[in-house]
Image (tube, rainbow, N blue to C red; front, side):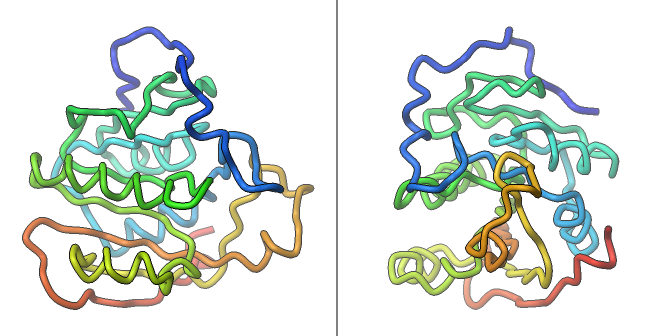
Length: 206
């Protein structure tokens, strides 16, 4: 059952925090996640409690989690008519569920990593799992190298075919978007050392 959080929907007083995107990026970093990405994750990972989706957008990930039987709390900085709008995850001080699963905004340099850091802070308090859908190219980023070595994911799942269209519009296809590739990074409490790496074919979940 999806739990939109029992507060009225409001828009953030400072949405500029995530509007400072690179030229050519979708407004507010809105790239809805195709359902097969979440289905593929759930074929290899399970969660022993409620899940927080802190960048829920139009509910693409949250709906798949709910369909799989999970209780999901859905929030976002922007109100898109799903879940609780006006909630800035990067300013959050209290976890809203044990686990966190999301496709974070990438935006300006470091925004995606800021989401990872905040999620791991919450997970240390709850003992939960964090799963983030990230850009495969960023895996070899020099900045991410240091961060991943310090707090390594327990698993990396590489997706063979996935396109997150800007604002969910296939008509907005560009050569750059078509070349994007993704992976799920999964952090688990107490994990140290190298992650498990595996390949997931999204065609099996369309």
